[in-house]
Image (cartoon, rainbow, N blue to C red; front, side):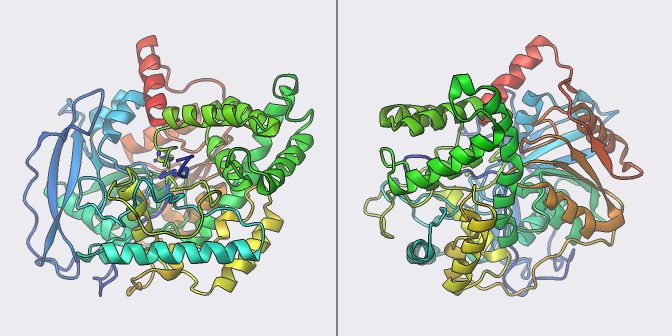
Length: 561
């Protein structure tokens, strides 16, 4: 769910969302096929671009390119570590994932410390960050996206009619062909959530641990679910936050963006109605909703300085990830309603600066990149599909490329355009706030690799060690995802439901009940006796002093949360 994003070229949140599955005759669940165990990591200073407020150590772990051939070609996965400083309290390692797919996780141990994760957790675990295969410092993949190419990001635009879906299909078919042309080393076919989970078990072995604990948000929930399903006996304490409800960012997860925004929007509508004299968006929540739909349709017909209805719908979706963004959302809405192009440009530039990756996404996710979901602003001003015309790489090339490789490989996607036309029309009618964008066609319909092994299902067989934490009104990963994960894991899991609307629960938000329930599980390994409901709270569970509060605020700002 990291909950990182682009507006002028396309807002891309690579926050919280999918990874893919092993595509060649992969081993059975939990079986890495044997082979030579990897050597222990050689910890050293992290690369210069891994910028943190506390020092981390980094190392690389060799893993098989193809887990069906464990002694064959190896690739390197970079990990980071914030080590426990209390040997008496240390109980193991806690591997982390902030979302995506496509988001780097090397800074996450320091990020969690900066957000105020309880010191008891820092004492109990070495926090381990990771760039998953194909991402960042871990054998990165590339589709060859350039800064001049005007690729809008990985969440498709809303579509006003069948013709818009057909136009989108032509565009994304070209993107799929571009990715195939740049996949010269064949790494993309091996990118999947399943294979990343198998990499995680290699990391466990390299660290000399019998078991692996895990915290993941948004797309990270799929990765944690995959590990607990493939390696139930090696999994220790698994916390999955802001859930997709599957071991992949599949098409159902994409389509849940529509109902997610419908569930979340009333929070903003009430906020705006209480401030009508300041923002002028409507005196009642119903009026705010009606004005939103009217403005989106007007922008479809008459964009403001190139800012169309698809951009507006997507940006509102992103801004509602956090209550703290409501004010900025209201200001942008005002400027668009007034037709003030100069103000819109200034405000979107400020948003790009304050929400890292909003200039591309939350690169999924997710929470952080979102907090998770790789996203985009839509087709406005994009024009027809085009090949790169320069050699200037887009700063989001790797994030977008990894997102596509994992998402398209993980599950089967419909290949006929008519399916997307039908589903967009249905979702546009049922969930008009998002305009059917979640059902629109993506490059996965034309992807150059077919999945070989069956899609991975969440596995109810294994220890009772999965805590599912979920806000009730999360727009990107709605509560339904948490309910599905809880049901699929059965007695292995408990669900913690929180009366809140932000994307990201544990430490990224600050509900005392959710914080205490999750921390207790990480420390004693005991699930609650039954599912837990956490009421809304204005009281901080973190109880930080002034210095720690300032550090948390700075970390949230740096993460764009």
